[in-house]
Amino acid sequence: MTAAQISATPDEVERKAKENTLLSPRFYTTDFKAMDAIDVSPIRAEWDVMMAEYEGDNNHDHFQRNELFAKEVNEVFSQVSPELRKEFLEFLITSVTSEFSGCILYNEIQKNVSNPDIKALMRYMARDESRHAGFINSSLKDFGLGLDLGGLKRTKAYTYFKPKYIFYATYLSEKIGYARYITIFRQLEAHPDKRFHPIFRWFERWCNDEFRHGESFALIMRTQPNLLRGANVLWIRFFLLAVYATMYVRDHTRPMLHEAMGLDSTDYDYKVFRITSEISKQVFPVSLDIDHPVFRAGMERLFHIQTQLDAAKERGGLIGKIKQAGWAVAGVAAFARLYLLPVHKHELPAQVRVAPAW
Image 1 (tube, rainbow, N blue to C red):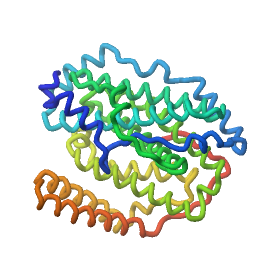
Image 2 (spheres, helix red, strand yellow; image 1 turned 180 degrees about the vertical axis):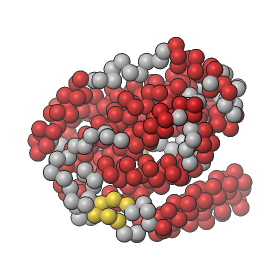
Image 3 (cartoon, one colour; image 1 turned 90 degrees about the horizontal axis):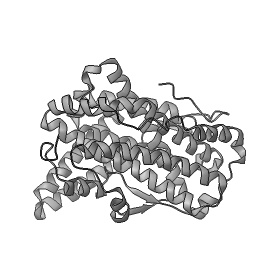
Protein backbone atom coordinates (compact mmCIF):
# COMPACT_ATOMS: atom_id res chain seq x y z
CA MET A 1 0.00 0.00 0.00
CA THR A 2 1.36 3.40 -1.00
CA ALA A 3 1.19 6.86 0.55
CA ALA A 4 -1.31 7.85 -2.15
CA GLN A 5 -3.57 4.95 -1.23
CA ILE A 6 -3.57 5.98 2.42
CA SER A 7 -4.22 9.64 1.45
CA ALA A 8 -1.16 11.26 3.03
CA THR A 9 2.21 12.63 2.05
CA PRO A 10 5.59 12.42 3.82
CA ASP A 11 5.47 16.20 4.43
CA GLU A 12 2.07 15.90 6.11
CA VAL A 13 3.33 13.10 8.36
CA GLU A 14 6.40 15.15 9.32
CA ARG A 15 4.24 18.20 10.05
CA LYS A 16 1.92 16.10 12.22
CA ALA A 17 4.86 14.68 14.18
CA LYS A 18 6.27 18.18 14.79
CA GLU A 19 3.00 19.58 16.16
CA ASN A 20 2.98 20.88 19.72
CA THR A 21 -0.68 20.94 20.74
CA LEU A 22 -2.52 19.91 23.89
CA LEU A 23 -3.13 16.48 22.33
CA SER A 24 0.21 15.83 20.63
CA PRO A 25 3.26 14.14 22.21
CA ARG A 26 6.05 16.52 23.19
CA PHE A 27 9.83 16.29 23.46
CA TYR A 28 11.23 17.11 26.91
CA THR A 29 14.42 18.21 28.59
CA THR A 30 15.10 18.54 32.31
CA ASP A 31 17.55 19.42 35.09
CA PHE A 32 20.37 16.91 34.61
CA LYS A 33 22.18 17.99 37.80
CA ALA A 34 19.10 17.11 39.88
CA MET A 35 18.80 13.76 38.08
CA ASP A 36 22.46 13.07 38.88
CA ALA A 37 21.80 13.59 42.61
CA ILE A 38 19.15 10.83 42.92
CA ASP A 39 20.04 8.31 45.63
CA VAL A 40 18.33 4.93 45.22
CA SER A 41 19.76 3.41 48.41
CA PRO A 42 16.38 3.50 50.26
CA ILE A 43 14.95 1.07 47.68
CA ARG A 44 18.20 -0.71 46.74
CA ALA A 45 16.85 -4.27 47.00
CA GLU A 46 13.91 -3.65 44.64
CA TRP A 47 16.11 -1.51 42.38
CA ASP A 48 18.70 -4.24 41.90
CA VAL A 49 16.03 -6.81 41.02
CA MET A 50 14.60 -4.43 38.43
CA MET A 51 18.00 -3.67 36.93
CA ALA A 52 18.67 -7.39 36.58
CA GLU A 53 15.45 -7.60 34.53
CA TYR A 54 16.68 -4.81 32.26
CA GLU A 55 20.01 -6.59 31.89
CA GLY A 56 18.22 -9.83 30.99
CA ASP A 57 16.54 -7.98 28.09
CA ASN A 58 13.79 -10.52 27.46
CA ASN A 59 12.52 -8.53 24.48
CA HIS A 60 15.83 -8.38 22.62
CA ASP A 61 14.44 -10.52 19.79
CA HIS A 62 10.81 -9.36 19.88
CA PHE A 63 10.74 -6.31 17.63
CA GLN A 64 11.48 -8.11 14.38
CA ARG A 65 9.00 -8.43 11.55
CA ASN A 66 8.42 -11.70 9.77
CA GLU A 67 6.85 -12.82 6.50
CA LEU A 68 3.43 -13.08 8.12
CA PHE A 69 3.61 -9.39 9.04
CA ALA A 70 4.01 -8.30 5.41
CA LYS A 71 1.37 -10.79 4.30
CA GLU A 72 -1.22 -9.39 6.71
CA VAL A 73 -0.46 -5.80 5.70
CA ASN A 74 -1.00 -6.68 2.05
CA GLU A 75 -4.01 -8.95 2.48
CA VAL A 76 -5.87 -7.62 5.54
CA PHE A 77 -5.03 -3.96 6.00
CA SER A 78 -5.49 -3.28 2.29
CA GLN A 79 -9.20 -4.09 2.75
CA VAL A 80 -9.98 -1.46 5.41
CA SER A 81 -11.86 1.74 4.66
CA PRO A 82 -10.08 5.02 3.82
CA GLU A 83 -11.48 6.52 7.03
CA LEU A 84 -9.98 3.75 9.17
CA ARG A 85 -6.66 4.03 7.32
CA LYS A 86 -6.57 7.74 8.18
CA GLU A 87 -7.23 7.13 11.88
CA PHE A 88 -4.71 4.28 12.02
CA LEU A 89 -2.09 6.48 10.37
CA GLU A 90 -2.69 9.16 13.01
CA PHE A 91 -2.34 6.47 15.68
CA LEU A 92 1.02 5.40 14.23
CA ILE A 93 2.29 9.00 14.02
CA THR A 94 1.40 9.90 17.61
CA SER A 95 2.73 6.53 18.83
CA VAL A 96 6.11 6.78 17.11
CA THR A 97 6.47 10.41 18.28
CA SER A 98 5.64 9.42 21.85
CA GLU A 99 8.04 6.47 21.88
CA PHE A 100 10.82 8.53 20.31
CA SER A 101 10.20 11.30 22.84
CA GLY A 102 11.04 8.83 25.61
CA CYS A 103 14.10 7.63 23.72
CA ILE A 104 15.45 11.18 23.38
CA LEU A 105 14.78 12.15 27.00
CA TYR A 106 16.31 8.99 28.47
CA ASN A 107 19.32 9.18 26.17
CA GLU A 108 19.97 12.83 27.01
CA ILE A 109 19.78 12.11 30.73
CA GLN A 110 22.20 9.18 30.52
CA LYS A 111 24.68 11.30 28.54
CA ASN A 112 24.55 14.14 31.08
CA VAL A 113 24.80 12.29 34.40
CA SER A 114 27.59 10.37 36.09
CA ASN A 115 25.40 8.66 38.74
CA PRO A 116 25.89 4.97 37.79
CA ASP A 117 22.39 3.90 38.86
CA ILE A 118 20.58 6.58 36.87
CA LYS A 119 22.96 6.32 33.92
CA ALA A 120 22.38 2.57 33.59
CA LEU A 121 18.61 2.90 33.96
CA MET A 122 18.32 5.59 31.32
CA ARG A 123 20.52 3.64 28.91
CA TYR A 124 18.25 0.60 29.20
CA MET A 125 15.05 2.60 28.81
CA ALA A 126 16.43 4.50 25.81
CA ARG A 127 17.30 1.13 24.26
CA ASP A 128 13.72 -0.07 24.69
CA GLU A 129 12.10 3.11 23.38
CA SER A 130 14.42 3.15 20.37
CA ARG A 131 13.22 -0.33 19.45
CA HIS A 132 9.58 0.69 19.87
CA ALA A 133 9.94 3.82 17.74
CA GLY A 134 11.85 1.96 15.04
CA PHE A 135 9.25 -0.82 14.93
CA ILE A 136 6.36 1.63 14.51
CA ASN A 137 8.31 3.63 11.94
CA SER A 138 8.72 0.45 9.89
CA SER A 139 4.94 0.30 9.58
CA LEU A 140 4.90 3.92 8.40
CA LYS A 141 7.56 2.99 5.84
CA ASP A 142 5.20 0.31 4.47
CA PHE A 143 3.16 3.23 3.15
CA GLY A 144 6.16 5.27 2.04
CA LEU A 145 5.64 7.56 5.04
CA GLY A 146 8.55 6.74 7.34
CA LEU A 147 9.70 9.58 9.58
CA ASP A 148 13.26 10.91 9.61
CA LEU A 149 13.66 10.46 13.37
CA GLY A 150 17.06 12.13 13.40
CA GLY A 151 15.59 15.15 11.66
CA LEU A 152 12.63 15.17 14.04
CA LYS A 153 15.03 15.24 16.99
CA ARG A 154 16.75 18.31 15.56
CA THR A 155 13.66 20.27 14.51
CA LYS A 156 10.82 19.54 16.96
CA ALA A 157 10.46 22.01 19.84
CA TYR A 158 11.45 20.87 23.33
CA THR A 159 9.61 21.57 26.60
CA TYR A 160 11.53 21.97 29.86
CA PHE A 161 10.09 20.06 32.83
CA LYS A 162 11.47 19.96 36.35
CA PRO A 163 12.47 16.42 37.33
CA LYS A 164 9.40 15.95 39.55
CA TYR A 165 7.13 16.80 36.61
CA ILE A 166 9.09 14.35 34.47
CA PHE A 167 8.54 11.69 37.15
CA TYR A 168 4.78 12.28 37.44
CA ALA A 169 4.12 12.63 33.71
CA THR A 170 6.42 9.88 32.48
CA TYR A 171 5.32 7.40 35.14
CA LEU A 172 1.72 7.91 34.05
CA SER A 173 2.60 7.84 30.36
CA GLU A 174 4.36 4.49 30.74
CA LYS A 175 1.65 2.93 32.92
CA ILE A 176 -1.25 4.15 30.82
CA GLY A 177 0.67 2.96 27.76
CA TYR A 178 0.79 -0.50 29.33
CA ALA A 179 -2.94 -0.38 30.11
CA ARG A 180 -3.81 0.72 26.57
CA TYR A 181 -1.71 -1.90 24.84
CA ILE A 182 -2.72 -4.82 27.05
CA THR A 183 -6.42 -3.93 26.73
CA ILE A 184 -6.14 -3.89 22.93
CA PHE A 185 -4.12 -7.10 22.92
CA ARG A 186 -6.65 -8.95 25.13
CA GLN A 187 -9.54 -7.74 22.96
CA LEU A 188 -7.91 -8.92 19.72
CA GLU A 189 -6.72 -12.14 21.35
CA ALA A 190 -10.38 -12.92 22.03
CA HIS A 191 -11.55 -11.61 18.65
CA PRO A 192 -8.75 -12.25 16.11
CA ASP A 193 -11.09 -11.40 13.24
CA LYS A 194 -10.95 -7.78 14.45
CA ARG A 195 -7.16 -7.56 14.07
CA PHE A 196 -6.86 -5.39 10.96
CA HIS A 197 -3.08 -4.83 11.23
CA PRO A 198 -0.32 -7.19 12.42
CA ILE A 199 1.38 -4.65 14.72
CA PHE A 200 -1.19 -5.51 17.40
CA ARG A 201 0.25 -9.04 17.69
CA TRP A 202 3.37 -7.53 19.27
CA PHE A 203 1.54 -5.60 22.00
CA GLU A 204 1.67 -8.17 24.84
CA ARG A 205 5.44 -8.37 25.29
CA TRP A 206 5.83 -4.77 24.13
CA CYS A 207 3.61 -3.40 26.89
CA ASN A 208 5.72 -5.15 29.53
CA ASP A 209 8.56 -2.78 28.58
CA GLU A 210 6.22 0.13 29.28
CA PHE A 211 5.20 -1.40 32.60
CA ARG A 212 8.82 -1.82 33.73
CA HIS A 213 9.66 1.76 32.74
CA GLY A 214 6.81 2.91 34.96
CA GLU A 215 8.17 0.77 37.79
CA SER A 216 11.47 2.62 37.46
CA PHE A 217 9.86 6.00 38.04
CA ALA A 218 7.75 4.60 40.88
CA LEU A 219 10.93 3.52 42.67
CA ILE A 220 12.61 6.88 42.02
CA MET A 221 9.64 8.76 43.46
CA ARG A 222 9.59 6.55 46.55
CA THR A 223 13.20 7.60 47.25
CA GLN A 224 11.91 11.17 47.62
CA PRO A 225 8.84 11.01 49.90
CA ASN A 226 8.34 14.76 49.70
CA LEU A 227 7.22 14.29 46.08
CA LEU A 228 4.23 12.27 47.30
CA ARG A 229 2.82 14.47 50.04
CA GLY A 230 1.87 18.03 50.91
CA ALA A 231 1.43 20.49 48.07
CA ASN A 232 2.93 17.99 45.61
CA VAL A 233 -0.25 15.92 45.87
CA LEU A 234 -1.93 18.77 44.00
CA TRP A 235 0.55 18.26 41.16
CA ILE A 236 -0.15 14.53 41.18
CA ARG A 237 -3.87 15.27 40.81
CA PHE A 238 -3.12 17.67 37.96
CA PHE A 239 -1.06 15.17 36.01
CA LEU A 240 -3.54 12.34 36.59
CA LEU A 241 -6.34 14.48 35.20
CA ALA A 242 -4.27 15.90 32.34
CA VAL A 243 -3.16 12.44 31.16
CA TYR A 244 -6.66 10.96 31.42
CA ALA A 245 -8.31 13.94 29.73
CA THR A 246 -5.79 13.98 26.88
CA MET A 247 -6.33 10.29 26.24
CA TYR A 248 -10.12 10.60 26.36
CA VAL A 249 -10.30 13.50 23.94
CA ARG A 250 -7.74 12.06 21.53
CA ASP A 251 -9.38 8.62 21.50
CA HIS A 252 -12.79 10.09 20.81
CA THR A 253 -11.43 11.82 17.73
CA ARG A 254 -10.64 8.31 16.39
CA PRO A 255 -13.91 6.39 16.88
CA MET A 256 -13.45 4.11 13.87
CA LEU A 257 -10.10 2.82 15.16
CA HIS A 258 -11.74 1.38 18.26
CA GLU A 259 -14.91 0.33 16.48
CA ALA A 260 -12.86 -1.73 14.04
CA MET A 261 -11.40 -3.62 17.02
CA GLY A 262 -14.85 -4.22 18.46
CA LEU A 263 -14.31 -1.62 21.18
CA ASP A 264 -16.39 1.35 22.25
CA SER A 265 -14.09 4.35 22.77
CA THR A 266 -15.69 5.33 26.08
CA ASP A 267 -15.75 1.80 27.50
CA TYR A 268 -12.15 1.27 26.37
CA ASP A 269 -10.95 4.50 27.97
CA TYR A 270 -12.59 3.80 31.31
CA LYS A 271 -11.16 0.29 31.36
CA VAL A 272 -7.71 1.80 30.77
CA PHE A 273 -8.34 4.44 33.47
CA ARG A 274 -9.37 1.71 35.91
CA ILE A 275 -6.22 -0.36 35.28
CA THR A 276 -3.98 2.71 35.51
CA SER A 277 -5.64 3.91 38.71
CA GLU A 278 -5.18 0.51 40.33
CA ILE A 279 -1.51 0.33 39.34
CA SER A 280 -0.76 3.90 40.43
CA LYS A 281 -1.72 3.10 44.03
CA GLN A 282 1.84 1.74 44.31
CA VAL A 283 3.18 5.29 44.40
CA PHE A 284 0.42 7.92 44.32
CA PRO A 285 -1.52 8.60 47.55
CA VAL A 286 -4.60 9.66 45.55
CA SER A 287 -6.56 8.47 42.53
CA LEU A 288 -9.36 10.12 40.57
CA ASP A 289 -12.99 9.18 41.11
CA ILE A 290 -13.54 8.09 37.52
CA ASP A 291 -17.07 6.84 38.27
CA HIS A 292 -18.31 10.19 39.57
CA PRO A 293 -21.11 11.42 37.26
CA VAL A 294 -19.54 14.88 37.10
CA PHE A 295 -16.21 13.35 36.04
CA ARG A 296 -17.84 11.44 33.19
CA ALA A 297 -19.87 14.44 32.08
CA GLY A 298 -16.75 16.59 32.28
CA MET A 299 -14.80 14.27 30.01
CA GLU A 300 -17.58 14.50 27.44
CA ARG A 301 -17.57 18.26 27.84
CA LEU A 302 -13.83 18.42 27.12
CA PHE A 303 -14.30 16.34 23.99
CA HIS A 304 -17.10 18.63 22.81
CA ILE A 305 -14.93 21.68 23.44
CA GLN A 306 -12.10 20.14 21.43
CA THR A 307 -14.41 19.54 18.45
CA GLN A 308 -15.52 23.18 18.61
CA LEU A 309 -11.91 24.35 18.83
CA ASP A 310 -11.03 22.31 15.77
CA ALA A 311 -14.00 23.74 13.88
CA ALA A 312 -13.04 27.30 14.84
CA LYS A 313 -9.45 26.70 13.76
CA GLU A 314 -10.61 25.33 10.42
CA ARG A 315 -12.89 28.36 9.92
CA GLY A 316 -9.97 30.76 10.37
CA GLY A 317 -10.14 34.50 10.14
CA LEU A 318 -11.07 36.90 12.91
CA ILE A 319 -14.29 35.08 13.80
CA GLY A 320 -12.45 31.79 13.96
CA LYS A 321 -9.84 33.26 16.32
CA ILE A 322 -12.50 34.75 18.58
CA LYS A 323 -14.29 31.40 18.74
CA GLN A 324 -11.01 29.63 19.51
CA ALA A 325 -10.36 31.99 22.42
CA GLY A 326 -13.85 31.47 23.78
CA TRP A 327 -13.68 27.69 23.59
CA ALA A 328 -10.18 27.73 25.12
CA VAL A 329 -11.58 29.56 28.16
CA ALA A 330 -14.42 27.02 28.31
CA GLY A 331 -11.83 24.21 28.25
CA VAL A 332 -9.92 25.69 31.18
CA ALA A 333 -13.16 26.04 33.15
CA ALA A 334 -14.20 22.44 32.41
CA PHE A 335 -10.76 21.15 33.43
CA ALA A 336 -10.85 23.20 36.65
CA ARG A 337 -14.24 21.78 37.60
CA LEU A 338 -12.90 18.25 37.14
CA TYR A 339 -9.77 19.09 39.12
CA LEU A 340 -11.84 20.21 42.10
CA LEU A 341 -13.77 16.94 42.37
CA PRO A 342 -13.08 14.80 45.47
CA VAL A 343 -10.42 12.10 45.04
CA HIS A 344 -9.80 8.68 46.57
CA LYS A 345 -6.96 8.56 49.12
CA HIS A 346 -4.63 5.60 49.71
CA GLU A 347 -1.89 4.46 52.03
CA LEU A 348 1.29 3.64 50.14
CA PRO A 349 2.34 -0.04 50.32
CA ALA A 350 5.67 -1.01 51.90
CA GLN A 351 6.70 -2.85 48.73
CA VAL A 352 6.73 -0.55 45.75
CA ARG A 353 6.75 -2.84 42.73
CA VAL A 354 3.71 -4.60 41.30
CA ALA A 355 3.38 -7.25 38.60
CA PRO A 356 1.77 -6.74 35.16
CA ALA A 357 -1.19 -9.00 35.90
CA TRP A 358 -3.82 -7.67 33.50
